[in-house]
Amino acid sequence: MNPFFYQRFFTLVMACLSLVVAGIRLSSSDYKLQDRGSSILFPLILCFGLVFWIGMRPVSGAFGDTVNYAMEYSTMDPHSVYMDWSGEWVWRLLMNGCKMVGLSLQTFFTIVAAGYILSAFLAVMLFMPRDPMLGTLFLLGSLMFFPFAVNGLRNGLACHLVLLGAVLLLSDKWIPGTLICFLAFGIHRSVILPIAAIVFAIFVTRNVRFALIFWLFSILVSLVAGGAVTNFFASLGFDDRMSQYVTINDMGQFSRVGFRWDFLLYSAAPMLMAWYVCIKQKASDNWYDVICMVYCLCNAFWVMVIRSAFSNRFAYLSWFLYPLVIAYPLVNLEIRYDQDRFTGLVLLAYAAFSMFMWFVFW
Image (cartoon, rainbow, N blue to C red):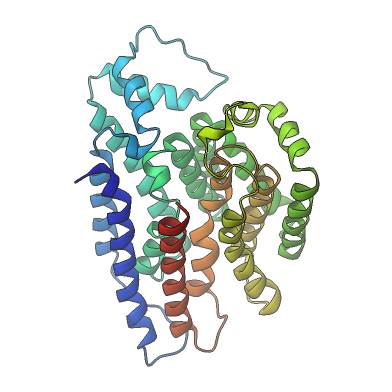
C-alpha cells in the first residue's frame, strides 16, 4: 500500500465499523442503558492486527518522525551510547536493548506499536468492561490515534501507559499504577503534566465545575497573553522539545501556526460531554470525575501554549483521554432515557467529526 494512503485507509475502516455499530444502536428496540455483553474477541483481534500493520509499515515521510526514529535506530551503536538517567532513560534502554539483540527496525517499531495500542486497549477494557467493541471504536476512531502511532511515537506510548496507570490507581492498585506512570515518565518527560493532574484529581479535588471554569479561563489567558505564557512554560524545561518549538525562527515551514481554532473546537466536545454528565445530569461517578478533571486541566495547559509550533504534541497530553471522556458515560452511567440510541448518534458524530477534521483541515 502507498504509505500516503495508510491513514486514509485506517480512517475509512474505522468509519465503516462505527457506522455498523451505530446502526445497530439506532435500530435498537431497547432504549435503556444495558450490558451489551459483546465479545472481546473481535476488538482484540483488531488491535493485534493493527500492531503488526502499523509496526511493519515502510519508512516514509508520510509517517512523520518515523523517518527520524528509523535513522537513529539504524545508525546507533548501542555499546557507545551514553545513558542520560535524567532524560528519557526508559526509551533509550528500549532502543539499546532491541539493537543489542539484533532486532530489525520493523521489529522495533512493532514492539513500540504493541505498547502503544495494547496498553490503551487494556486500559479501555478496564474502564469500560461492559462493552468492549464500543470502547475500542472510540479509542481507535480518535483523531490523533493513528498520527501518534506512527509520528509522535514516544509521546503516544508514554500517554497510553499513563492511561493504563490511571485506571490501576483508580482501582487502588497503587504499586503497579505508580510503576507504570514512572515508566511512562522515563519514555517522555512531558507526561508529568497528566500524572500530576491525576494525583491532583485523586487526592485534592474532583470538582469538574472548577475544571471547566479553569479551561474557559485558559482561553482568555491565551488570547490576551498567549506568547508570554508560552515562553514561560518553555523556560521551565519540562518537555525536551518545547523550547525548540517556541523559539524557532522559520515559521513558514509549519502549517497553521497560531491560535488553532480548529483544534480548540475539537477539544471542546469532551468539555460539553463533561458538562452534560457531571453538571446538568448530575450522573457522574468518582472515576468519571477524575477523567474529566485530568482532561480539562491538561487541555487548559495546551490552550495556553497553543501558538507554539507542533502544538498538537502538547494537545495530546489531554487528547489521549478524549475517547474516555466521551464513551465512559455512554457505557457506565445512566444519562438519558434513550441511552442506547443516543450512544449510536454520538458514535456517528464522533466518527464523522474525526473524518471531517482529517480530510478538511489536514
